[in-house]
Length: 268
Length: 203
Image (tube, rainbow over all chains, first blue to last red; front, side):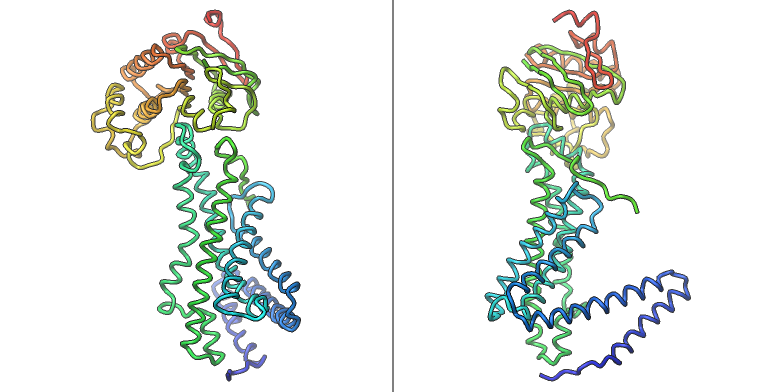
């Protein structure tokens, strides 16, 4: 396998593009120049550190440290998903539901992929486990945050429609059905769309990377298809678990709609 | 018979109240005084404490949906969960005669909810509640959007149901309506429910 090794000079040259963006921002007074540079620098520092951490983890190949790294990834994903919600449960419920559902979906699908199709040896080999978990989490996070956001917004906006059914003696499962369906659908639309557009509109990044690194296109495509299936499975599972758990938290043992358990995001 | 002992929740002082079968009581009070809060607490739609029972059966002993189909609360602005009127009725064919009796036209079941007036919604919400065959009905300003003719039709149907044993709690600002429907009257202010003299003396 041969691939063009990048020198630091190559990267510095690519970074010039960011300065072009910053220049545009200055010219049109977008006020984005500073933020662009900070974001670009952050990206560079974060990825470099991840590269070093991955290098160390690969060398260790220890289940304990790999597990710790996976845990840290899940916790960050949970925080990121919550930052995107306009409405949340009071206390740690939103964070718990988001993180818990992503952990469930991420672990099940990653272990499934590692132990069957990829046949890593040992199965927790961080060289396979961490990148795959990362890709699954990144997409599941979108599904979970979109699904939860739609569920909580829907419950608030359709309060009178939901309660009207409760008032006539329908059970909560029945009354929430429409809102839950919308929420799960909202969580699954991005991955569905990206599957439909894959290859035609966009070349998936992982596949592109493999091709650049010298892998046969057909082999790279096979890997990409596998990963997309794992991602879709993880997103569906995570969204489903999150919406189900959140809808249970929206009600109680007397099947009331408990919007008092929500807090609106503070302004600013 | 609906019996309420020590029913309370935030915004509501402990309430004691009994409602016989076939009895109607009227509740009045300024907006924000706690009328809806009281109704919602009886229907168990918000967390509350206290002992509520229907015909000797404690509320806590029956599943919440069963309780709410026996004790139905119809708010002043009822909710709708589908686009068409007919989708809100267990049996639109059986509901139609009731709707027509309340002055709605014969094609009402095919209408879109978004095009209904307040008064049309109120009457359809009432028909919808009757179809669930409640033992007790909690009505929040059921005729606020109606003209006198329609009010008379609604009241006549309520009288008929009361005669058949329905227990009715009606929130109304109209003292004349309260006198026409109710045998006892209560006022609620700042979450405190108290009887209105002199009708309150009659059981």
